[in-house]
Image 1 (tube, one colour):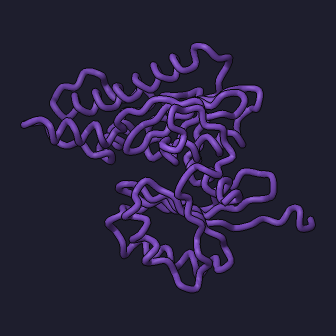
Image 2 (image 1 turned 90 degrees about the horizontal axis):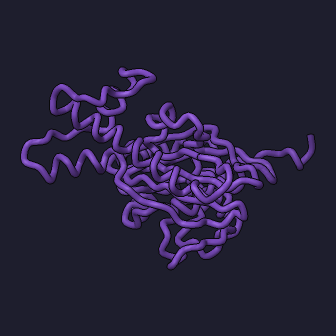
Length: 268
């Protein structure tokens, strides 16, 4: 098919406060990178992710790599385990070279993950429509991308895990609900979701966290969309699989930040 159809292999790494997300992508000129393999590790499980990193290097010796994240200490730790015979990764430290207009009071202080999502969505959305992006991780963000492609700002609220942690740590008696427990209960409950009336404390917390998150997202999406015509809704983040069945109009794109990194890295 010639060089025009030749695909390239790339590695993208997102280092957050608690987790490391690694994706191996293939891409062709002019297309958005497609995820061929994804891995998620706790930042504290250094032995596991360091082993995975070496295996990726051995299997993809010529792959380019890009790293970004909110955890600067975590990035430093990660780089200390970077295989010496692998090409040095590109580090995304600021949004200065992003192919994105940022309509915010202080553009350089907007979280990189939010802007990377916008870069990727601008390659995915219908260019005649604006977009709303919901990213459910440690925090949940609901952001707006104008029809012109400009990032227009948004809202930030606690994600599932942060809400559960706050209820446990700032009360005397409420138990800690893990994200795994919440996700499992939602899966067991099926398409209608958790019963809103919890019959015990754990069930009541699960209901409040889950439906509170769904309700807040729906309200924000509605208000952000009120003055624009037919925005497309995109959903990403670690909690997106749990949310997806209850946001049926959303386009589920679990790898948006990693895809955004790879697109941005071409300008670095």
